[in-house]
Image (cartoon, rainbow, N blue to C red):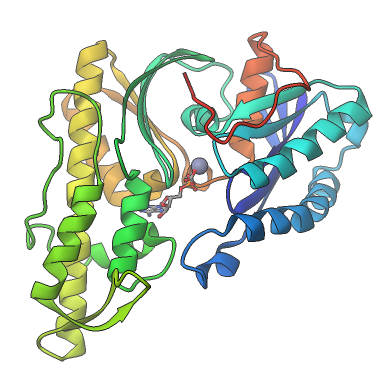
Length: 357
Ligand code: KG4
Ligand code: ZN
């Protein structure tokens, strides 16, 4: 079975061709065209710009992927696209393209939930998935999910405000760092002291499995004027400070920045670890999976690995190239769905707020 999948839920245009190969699978092509540079100057993703870019990129990506896979279009057995959650005008581009290809080829179309793509990605390429508790941490979502099988999901907890990745992005913006904020903060955190600043671990003892990260961002915001000089306030709401330490030397400024990044990152990790362990306890599961853009973070991966080892839990983490948005994970989810007899039809519409369960 060979599947062509398209992912255009946000600002990444991605296309992949995946083939089932015995009990494994072979990724024949995977293309990701990032639009980060185009949105960076606006300080975030502009939907209109994103959809125009998807439209411009997709035909080129399709041509290149099919050529590099070395197969003909009529060898595809199904076409899949992310149908939500995401930006409506972005989702529409990939969805319409995949539907058109499916109609043209007379092959099935599969509408895939973006979150299911992330959630299954730690098992990428495998024949089957095992029941697990999934922690999905991305720019738009923070979810703990009880995964009983393909298509059989129960939401255990979610963020009540900002997503984990969103917290990284917003704090990075406050610190005057680039977008996306995750990699920027991770890099600086490596040289910082995570115990330097005491930031709130919101909802750590709330008794449920939900998250809240907006208070953490606010705490960083109020801490900033005490440790740095807000010499240059950027943005219409004055949310961004140019980080200049009260001691004007560059070294001192970099140290404060590193300590802030390390302290912030550690709080996010502590919350994710504790809630994940609680979810495992609650479901009596012995397997945790980690996926989504924030799971690129090496400190998070290492922390969870140590915690799982200590508690006799198996940890499966998506490979770094599968953590951020891509179409290979969408193709894999489509393949597992088809193999499990779950199909969708052409009448299935995009849904910007598509729920996982
Ligand atoms: O999964 P993803 O590519 O897109 C969504 O579906 O949202 O996740 C993007 C998010 C961004 O917020 C980005 O800052 C975060 O993942 N991210 C990271 C790291 N790399 C990307 N967060 C923390 N540490 C990283 N190394
Ligand atoms: Zn994503």
